[in-house]
Length: 229
Image (cartoon, rainbow, N blue to C red; front, side, top):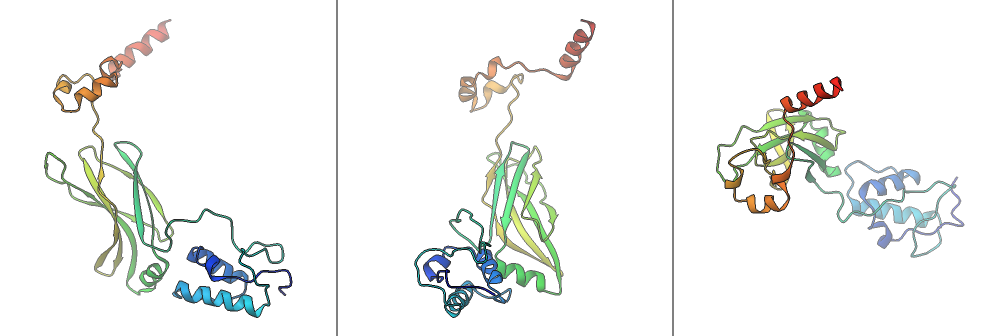
């Protein structure tokens, strides 16, 4: 049984700062049954009415723990929440890290469809300044519980975007697309044509002309000498 004598009543201004998942977690701890597709505004209303029914004291501050168990975990508040988004971060010129979120209502709608077959990422190469032919897009299947993935970027790709998609029967729907990601070029200091590239004045400031590059044969010779010593 919940003792509300020392509790504080939930107020709308506080509840509106929480994410939908935090509101649902709070409702579960208060014993409120929340349907999966219930809109935020109604979840907040249910919480406010329940706090009044339990006789919590009026206050403009946040909730105190009930039975020594916090209603929510302390986490930084996001700038936006309960939205579809996808972000791509380049680790280097060959690998990218992709993370995403699907709005709770959309996720429930997709996964409750009888024809639902899963989500996938569609990696689409875009033409660069040279306007070279774009290679065919490639797809990566992801689990319904996945929220991130590492992607290998083929060396010929200079620019790309990632679409988060859902497959339902024969239909493939794009949920959300990332911004265009430009891949930095890799320069070989031993390439004789390096001085002809437009970026060379900037590269020379980095000291690229003084880089010591070990080829496989150089490395093998050095290892052989070390073994002899």
